Image (cartoon, rainbow, N blue to C red; front, side, top):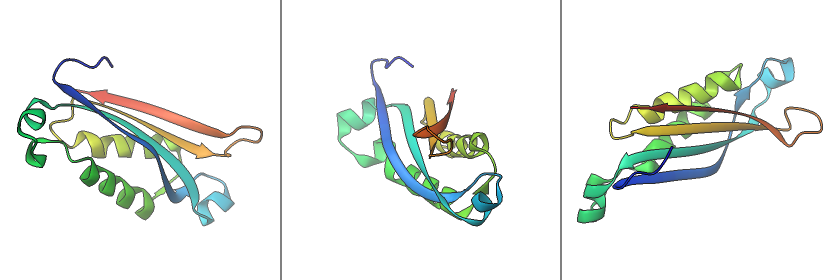
Length: 122
């Protein structure tokens, strides 16, 4: 999505978490790494003007909620995990656009990873 004047883009890159992800027995029994990348757009005019955290989107709060959710739950599909993370981000009313990509390293032989990306806007 194009960055409009007054909008800020937050990127969280390579948030590495461990969770239960997959459908095979060894995936159900053992946690695996996932890499999460987020892009969030929100109107930042007030934060820029006032230099006050109360007017900014707190990416630390969002990231902590994602960490807790991912590490405390089980997921059969990357699609479901990705959607649930996107839903957490979109709960914040200031978010105008969000994109979430989740990588599952070594999910396929001969591939570095497999990823799913989903986006939402308002």
